[in-house]
Amino acid sequence: MKFFIDTADTTEIRNAAEIGILDGVTTNPSLIAKSGRAFKDVILEICELVDGPVSAEVTATDYEGMVREGREFAGWAENIVVKIPLTREGLKACKTLTDEGIGVNVTLCFSTNQALLAARAGATYISPFIGRLDDLGQSGMDLIEEIVAAYANYPEIHTQVLVASIRHPRHVSEAALLGAHVATVPFGVIDKMFNHPLTDIGLEKFLKDWEKVPQG
Ligand code: G3P
Image 1: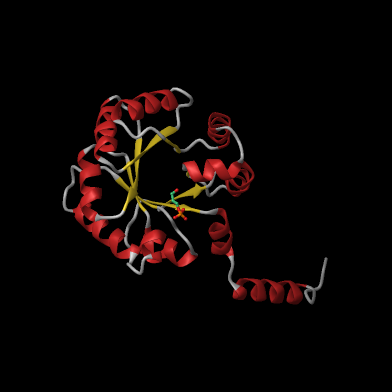
Image 2: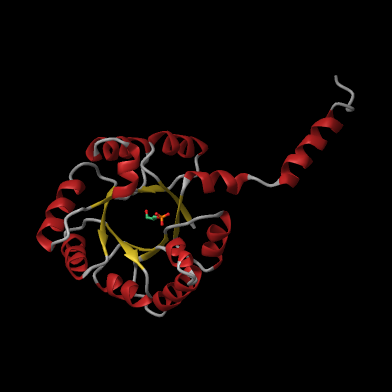
């Protein structure tokens, strides 16, 4: 499974990229607003930091506007993927942009039927939001299981399941067990994924024992 980071904070992106485990970046209008920076500036800086796909989200809601923004963003850097909401207009724009060879990440997916429609529209990625379903008392992971299973029935579907709205490390491992292609993970969750108390205790003991080894 590939790891994307879900942030527009370039310090976080730089840190994750330096570790060497970063395959791409997803942003959304809320994350851009949180960065406090201008949209184009921050997207261009992210594209410099990361070779893999960088999702930049349209804010137009009509077909023409989404296509116009999508074409513009795609011209900014080679690794831009245009992020488009899962609406009727959005899927129409997805079809147009993918036919032009522009990568599209269809976002705000909350059902298997929506994911099937996005695949027919040629989406490069479908982004089901699992944390937001969990927040409503539904199982976000059940949705991932359904989409992965449904897509697997049709070899002609090349849309990758990009698990979004991840809230904790268990979401990541469960997504991998279900065969999701990508998890987009907030920096805080990536950080937690490294941690295990037995690793720390084990390392401390190895280093203590090493002090007893005769030197030279
Ligand atoms: O970028 C889309 C998604 O990951 C948002 O997550 O935490 O706002 O539900 P969240």
